[in-house]
Length: 195
View 1 (tube, one colour):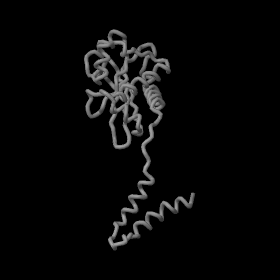
View 2 (cartoon, one colour):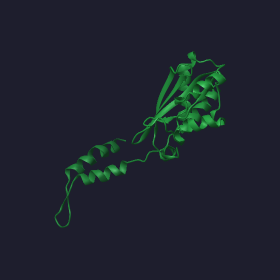
View 3 (cartoon, helix red, strand yellow):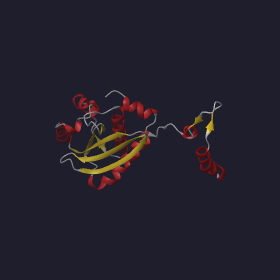
View 4 (cartoon, rainbow, N blue to C red):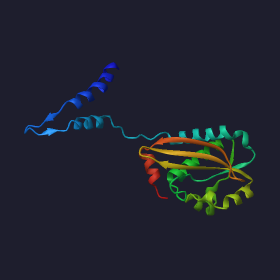
């Protein structure tokens, strides 16, 4: 291990101090050596366990909000939306919300399935479900206590997710959970999927 440490410390220093000369006497910038070395250490982003991350987020929400939740009342779940355009979701936003819903169900909470209601699903697919008055209609119709909602922001190498449990009657946030996922190929594909 100490040999690797020595290589990491001294090789870049040697490259900075060296100047390469071409056969015709033309000088090559010393940083070319550093760029070549840094490319050797570049790693492509690898996808995280998306399902596991979603289930852990749901567990975090449940832990934070359990004293405020009634196990006999149900929830609704909205597609997670792009923080830069709250009217838009993606395959990523829709699957994240479904995975959180799955874990809430696994933990004994009741969820009203919105995918079976075509009028709601169309709005949910666009990311507008909680922005519409239909949330209140669903809350009254099914005695819904809260909604699981969320946003995501895409960075250079990660996507940042915020999930919340919101009281359906007054829109007060009961719990919030933030997490980060690496921007691997599957995550990128889900984010670029059809809105």
